[in-house]
Image 1: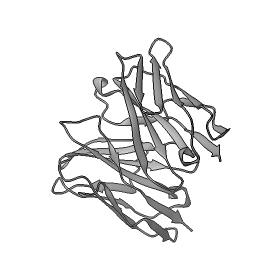
Image 2: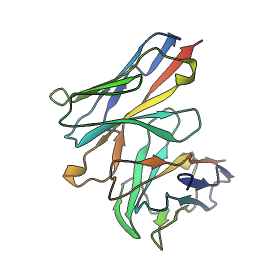
Image 3: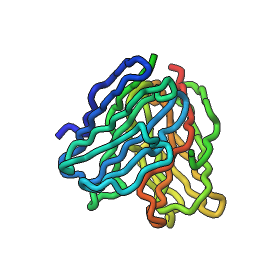
Image 4: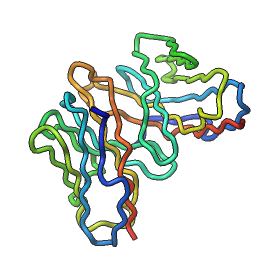
Length: 114
Length: 113
């Protein structure tokens, strides 16, 4: 296992289009997190899964955002009707119950909405 | 919203010098972590200090934590050009039930060769 994988690395989309990102966590990690990072800022929490259950969502996660982790393994983050303000780096991280503080981050998906 | 502020926002030093970055936070924490991010990349975990610890070392890194002042510092000794990156502190308040990290706004470190 080579760590947390995110796909795609970059996505350019037109305003109003829908986009979906994928995150594959470390296989034995049951906790999965999504963060958003805008230029020059630190990451901001979006949502958290423990296994397949989505246990926490930030107020940043508007109705246009939805995240799933159907089998408790990979996760998807979908943004509907994208807006220019959605342009950011979307980061995924995972950890496990045995090492809850050992977060591993993926390299992120850079979204540009034009 | 972001938990804390980091100071300075940007730091430029010469190779071999020490770099000190400070982080302040607002709420009670279980632990505080420092991460490094190279431009356009993901975050790499550097070091974790628990709320009952005051100082921790890892290689050229030294982290202090003052819970009474709600502040932490990261010292990188004998800096190298390869240390050029952004550094973020992140607080974990999982004792309160919150399961996510709250990041500061980061310090951008430039180490001149």
